[in-house]
Image (cartoon, helix red, strand yellow):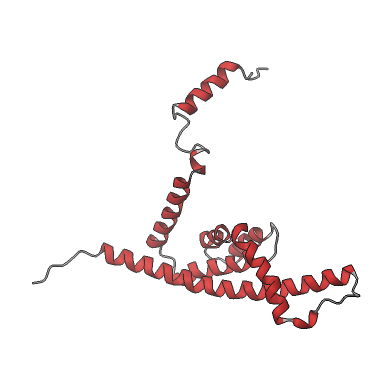
Length: 186
């Protein structure tokens, strides 16, 4: 029975390889850089340009992903989206996942705030009463928040659909225009 013993020599060798750039192209440290993120986004849009997937399928996947990402499903939204993408084969999986990258917690924080504000504006009969118990106040808050969140989720999903549809359309037209040879006038 042999075992691998970590020694100072092994650690030094690993450190030297890391300093000399011999860890390989897929080093986790290189993948954390802004340049790698930018290159991944460029690759994604290049794949969109070259894909045979319709604009509707890409935009629908992004819109559905936006709807699910905006709903208050802490941690379960991505699993719901992936499950729907596998059940309904026409939903574009990369676009639904890309929507979760776009709707990150930084963007969702103000949306959750505005969800509550919208719920209180649209549904004013759920006013807070002075004599209400804590459970009643929590229930009223949850109703106002969920009502406003559902309206915002639908609105932003529809807007996302049309924005992505137009962006994909422009990207594909731009690619067609760039790939055509320039004909000189006769």
